[in-house]
Image 1 (cartoon, helix red, strand yellow):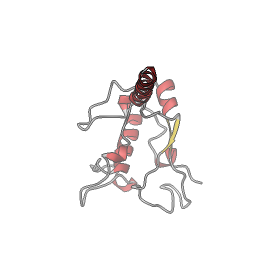
Image 2 (cartoon, rainbow, N blue to C red; image 1 turned 180 degrees about the horizontal axis):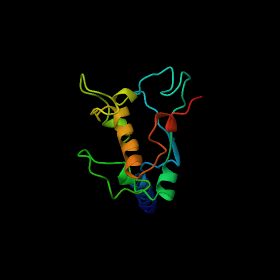
Image 3 (spheres, rainbow, N blue to C red; image 1 turned 135 degrees about the vertical axis):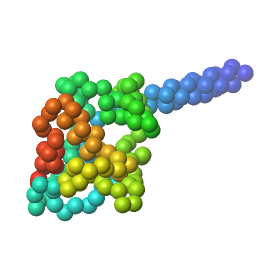
Image 4 (cartoon, helix red, strand yellow; image 1 turned 180 degrees about the vertical axis):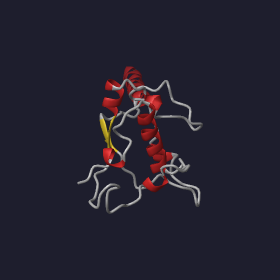
Length: 153
């Protein structure tokens, strides 16, 4: 009888450990991420040159620690409202999970469309609008021109 109780308690203990670790599992914000997606247009050259460009690298750490930005300043809900209560380890969707299409005939963010409304449901448009818009709002000169982020190889 004691073997049955021991086995039952052991099984319950293992279940608790797996459940607890699942609750704490989330999205770990990497210090630096490379902005890449299968949804991006395949370009043979960078926006400011005839050479191929590197994928844009984004530093969570720099934006959070040095610039004192909260996660919600970039990450938002389906209505565009900041997710102000986010913290490292929370499960966060990637941009492309929602920003994965453009309306037919709509403008996507490319240099020649800078001054025209764009469809932010297109992934590149959403990222450009978010990053460039924030940099302009904060009065930063870097990160507002193509070559600032899209470095030639």
